Image 1 (cartoon, rainbow, N blue to C red):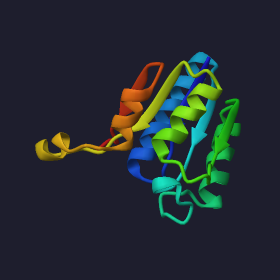
Image 2: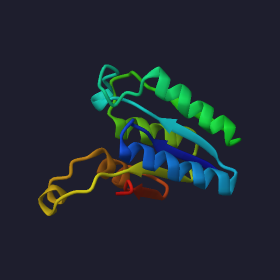
Image 3: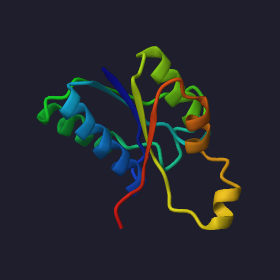
Length: 131
């Protein structure tokens, strides 16, 4: 089994990774973590620092999870990068983090989450951070 998750260093990103880790532990899946900046901009604050990536790598190693962490810098959007990784590893599941939204915000989503939900060829789990 293969799981792909999007990761950004925010509560939503951490919630997605935490959920994906639990799924990988339970199923013995290989986990692919994808982190990219907005629009593929690796100078964007959501592009994780090397310290963030090292900490995540150490956490996954300690948990005994087979994994790969990708930080594409090809200029593609996060959704395109997540979907490409899912296709590359023949993902059985994609996990993404989502923000809480107001009713108006829900009407004009246009988000990475929406693009992944609509473009995925496998089940997608959308996770909200705990309050």
